[in-house]
Amino acid sequence: MLVLGIDPGTAIVGYALVQKNRNILEPVCYGCITTKPTSKDGDRLCTIENELKKIIEKFKPDAAAVEKIFFFKNVKTVIGVSQARGVIMNALARLNIETFEYTPLQVKISVSGYGKAPKQQVQKMVKTLLCLKEIPKPDDAADALAIAICHLNQRQWGMENGKIKM
Image (cartoon, rainbow, N blue to C red; front, side, top):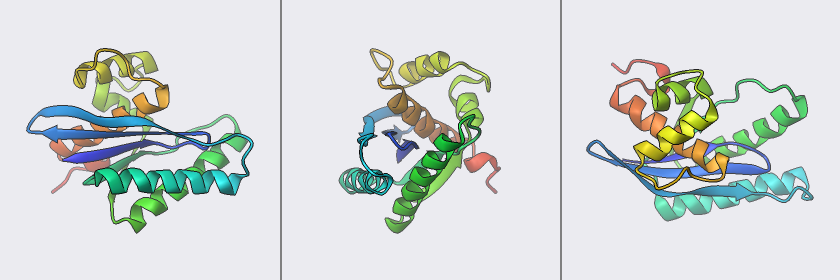
């Protein structure tokens, strides 16, 4: 199964494709979609949608896992991320990609076994689980890898989106 993990943002959207064959996780591709800070909001959202469509058309993932928005201290930031997340969810729906959502807590537990794990610990586990030589950079791409791993783990345990699958 090939899963597209997405860490939403306005300036940077982390993405990662992780393949699972039997019990082996393999990173296929990861990186970031970046937008220009000088661009208008609508243009930034169009860039995110267009680049995401290119990734989906190239790799044809079986499913997508997107991080849920949890808490932001800055209202301006949460609005921008929410807009980007909406564009991402819409693009996935239009391209008929089955989509699952996970909170940061679910991702941390699934990848590191501890819900309050610091970012560095999660990144080290991503490196270990995917047999990478170094921690993936930038952080947004590493987060997207963790989100994809979370979905593959949840699927294995029959707990997609935190609910037991009957």
